[in-house]
Image (cartoon, rainbow, N blue to C red; front, side, top):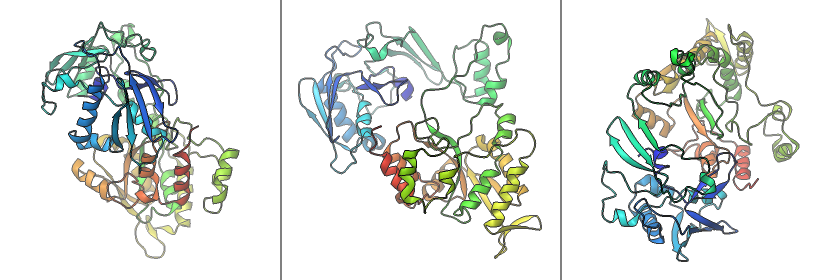
Length: 465
């Protein structure tokens, strides 16, 4: 089941506040106690929580669920709970998660434990949990599934006697008696159905259709509403072009900067996305870790031991990507890119960018597996060719793309970098640390090997503010 749907049929131990940085409030859990060294966490269940059939949620359900996850669940679940080595019953309604001695003890372990979602032991003892079925599962959340129409819709009805309706974390929520989640195989058909009033709400994440697809009678007459809003969450860098620094010439910072200058985001934003995009200039967009302006005094103090290892402009210039005019060519940026390339030993000969010493042409592929990136990459490639660079967009099948990512077999590609407001240490290490640059199946797609980056990751990992 779609996890976004499962979230309204089953309650976890705690729920995240949607308007606070990293606050969680009890759902199934009445209380929480955390060890000073973060080696364990103890929860106490509420005594008034029960399943939709009226049976109370008990410690038997908790123990059975934990055993299923650790021993019989799919590999994804077992990996997620690999560091939860033991569950100990410490009271009639209390239990303790004990974490592995070898795992790094951070607040993220505690946060992960809040998402533990108990399943009803008495229900699954009479049903096969490993069997694919269309029979709605027994839950304990604010809604229950009442109808499944394969390939078309799933219907939910509000549980009138939902046990948690008066919890503070649920205030103002779950106001509709009935939800229908409808599925369409074709977005154009879906948009026509929305305009015809077949369904009520759609969250459009395509800036082009948001700008152009809803100009119809219902909107003009005030019967249909279209609005944009800024989500409270911070995800990091939604999409970015990744240069594989394991390969030349991307191991040269001057080349990487020149290629970045060639991308005219403002023009693409106007033409393709109707000025609906903000450009990423940080892996930590819209979070407290996003670099803004010059480094603060505390940041300078943190970086001072590495002053000889990082470019001087880190201390003297704000972190910002080039801003271009949304009309015409970004000539100034391209001229600057040409200067950087020449300085790096790449000159223009017969309208081709070649290495001044070897005569080798500067050529590379941008490997992707979907046409979705065409609008993003085509004007970029056009500007690269104006610099004499032979850049090509190479589309491959998804399975081939997966294998190439696993072995870093690409010059450049496009990836997401999710960091969130409170970054997960293991995720940061996998994405940015030197030890994750060479082993296969990691997410350090750029091949970053920088001791300063490693040092900063280890400063962020145990931070509490």
